[in-house]
Image (cartoon, helix red, strand yellow):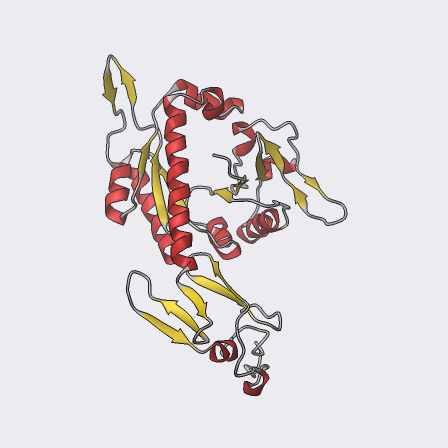
Amino acid sequence: MGARVGIFDADVFGPSLPNMVSPVNRLLVVNPESKSILPTEYLGVKLVSFGFAGQGRAIMRGPMVSGVINQLLTTTDWGELDYLVIDMPPGTGDIHLTLCQVAPLTAAVIVTTPQKLAFIDVAKGVRMFSKLKVPCVAVVENMCYFDADEKRYYPFGKGSGTQVVQQFGIPNLFDLPIRTTLSSSGDTGIPEVVSDPQGDVAKIFQNLGVCVVQQCAKIRQQVSTAVSYDRSIRAIRVKVPDSDEEFFLHPATVRRNDRSAQSVDEWTGEQKVQYGDVPEDIEPEEIRPMGNYAVSITWPDGFSQ
C-alpha cells in the first residue's frame, strides 16, 4: 500500500519471523559508533527478531526477557516508519506488559482459532488491552474452514471469532482458510501475498491491512483533536471523548501541576519548580498525542510534560 513498515517479532521464546520471511541478511548488525541495532530487510519491510540475533530461542526468566524486548525495540534504528507491527506471543505475560509500557501502542489485532478453548485466552488478551487503553480493531480467525465438493466445511466448528466480536464490540472479523499453500508459505520464507498476490488469501490480508490503516487513522484523529491550544483565549481546550462537552485549562496551571521527577523530588516529595518559576503568560509550543489516552506538551524552556 506504499507505507513504510517495520515488523518486530516480540516472541523471544519461539521467534517465528526467521521462518516466515527470507531476507538476504539473516543477522542483525550493531552500528559500532551509535551502538544501535540495524534491522534486516525483506521486500522493503524492516525486520527485528531475537531469531535474527544468532541466539535461536531464549531460555530465561521474566525480568531478563523484559530487558531483551526493551533493548531490541528501543535501540533499533528503525528510521522513519508509518507503521510498526509488533507480533506478540500468546498470553498476557511480561512481554506484553513491557511492550505496552515502552511503546504507545495505537491498536491491537487479535488472532485466534475456531475452538472454544481459544476464546478463553483471547478474552484475557482483550481485557488486558482494554485496561491499558489499547483498542482492539480486528479479529483474525486462523484455520477457519476449507472448501471441497463445492461446499464449505468448518472442521473445528464456528463461532470463536464471532463470539469475540460480539462480546467485546470489536468491529471487524477476518476468516483465514485451511490451505496447504498458506501453511507452507509460513515455512518456506515466502509469504503467500508474495507468491500469489492476486489470490483469495492475499485479498483477505489486503482487506485486513486496509482495515488497520482506517482504524488507526480514526483513532489518531480522535486523540489529536481531543487536546489543543486555543491562542485566541490563551487556554488549553480539552474535549471529552464521545461527548459534546469540553473544558479549558490555564497553561500556567498545567505547567505548575507537573508531578514528574523534574518538578518534584521523588524521595522527599519536595516541589522543585516553585509557583513563581512559571510565568503567568506561558504558552505551550506544541501539543501532540502519545498513544491513545495522553498528550505530550512541549514548553518554551524545552520541558516536555
